[in-house]
Length: 193
Image (tube, rainbow, N blue to C red; front, top):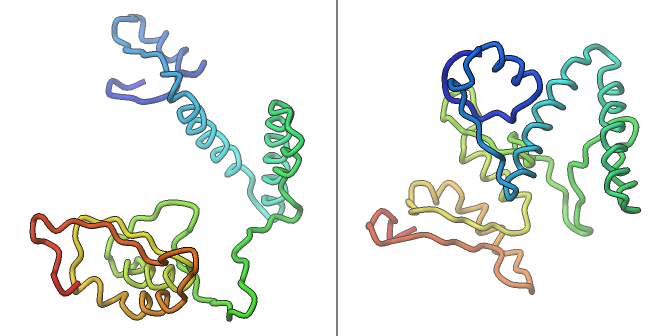
């Protein structure tokens, strides 16, 4: 292993690499905090599972990947000893749930290009979708909006105004559909916004 900073869970393979260094004083180790262990182990498993799934290629890749996931889920279900864990099994063929439409409401086909289940970084390059277009698509498909931002500019708000008005028109008896938390103490927020 190369000298530098690391934040890896110590595995048997890394332990062997460390032993090859010959001097244990060159290595800094720390115990995993019990309050963080679930996140550290889940992150390790995510990388391990992703690298294992990508090894399957070709026309049968999705089915082989599904089988591997089924074995992992089966092991987890066994460990959980929970009757509800049977519902964790992945169906054949692999499918993703994309929407459940409200009755009486016309389903929108204009989904955001960015995944809803993961974070996305919008760089503003011509190759990427624009932040404004993605926010408009998300607002058009959601039932509420919660905005937490340090300031609001009219130039940014006007791009979303029609979508926000359309969402506000679908008022809900359970409360507001648009909530905003922002600051005004530095004067960065435009009063018109």
